[in-house]
Length: 468
Ligand SMILES: Cc1ncc(COP(=O)(O)O)c(C=O)c1O
Image (tube, rainbow, N blue to C red; front, top):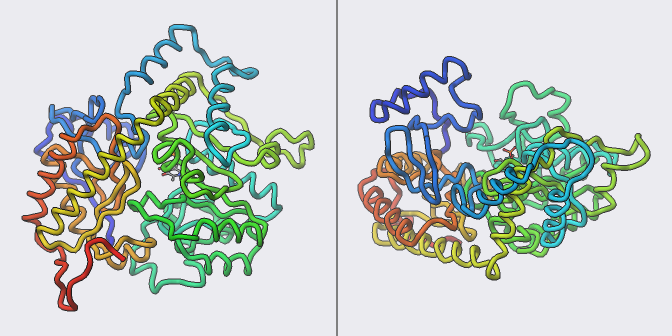
């Protein structure tokens, strides 16, 4: 069962990291500028290139964290870096007035390749984009209520700061058809606002319908594949079912493709699954590590951002929206993703398949109750006998402590997954087969010695490695 880590370990093994962190803690709360960066061991990274990162003590790591996902091409991809440098030399600056050629070019590229996007607006972060998408949905529908997913993450603002990795003890029994209580992941969300947000299980259409029958719903926002708790795929028909419910109850279906967009396909999950949301948001892999995000969708909805009637117009503004540096980075990233007929996708799929086959074979040889869930370059190894269908399933069945320990030991060997159980592993186009094989060797060695991993041969009989 999931239980959050507490406290901080002063790390003797990484003295230079400890020194820098100690210093930064004097002036930055906790020493980190995003709460999710407070991790164990407390490493300070000073350099990254391609598939690798180096800490302040000179240790090199094969990186599977990818800065929470953006670095699909690897760190400091030369093509992207070159485009940014060229742009700066050619006088790119923030004019802050009127439109620019690069933002038009980026918008054209997104509209051309994302099936659900007829027009697009450019922002700085995924949270800004999900914020705007929900506000736009409220303006369009005239409704206030929002449905989101238990186990999903869509940013830090009031509409989505809830029900992420809620401990099982707090969740209680599975709720279907129904909703979970609002469990804030932030202090400061007004109670009146909490009443507008309804968390349901992923892959549970009955609960969406239940909420729609109780409240006037403006939007349902979900990652098409839940990727903040590893890789939780939609079951066949689920996304289509959401589309049908959106049409029936007249709410806007918002796909949060901040993690899935551009990493899994140039057209994101809307193209992979053939389901068109009303609005879609992108971030992360769109610019390979530079801060830019996008909100797009049907033109009739997007035009609300410029409606001549101030009572209908949705305020979209931002000093740094489509800043030239991340904009040029995004254009270069998309160009790179399109090169040689999408070679990057074929290559990373090959690496992902190699990793999956390797992990499955290790689990089989060691007789571990484990299963791999994967989408292209992104995967997660779960210590349970089937691939999870939602957070509740995970919270009930995954061996969290084993997952945490495996990650911690891998980091000690120079392999860096995000050090928290169930978090996504991300392969990049800069990884090599050798990187995958080295990772597998370490994983095999660690898993063969780790205690407490459930065996496939349980008292109840032999369970399947490959899941249901
Ligand atoms: C699916 C998803 N949506 C939205 C966000 C928020 O994006 P940002 O951190 O850029 O605000 C994240 C961040 O991890 C995310 O994973």
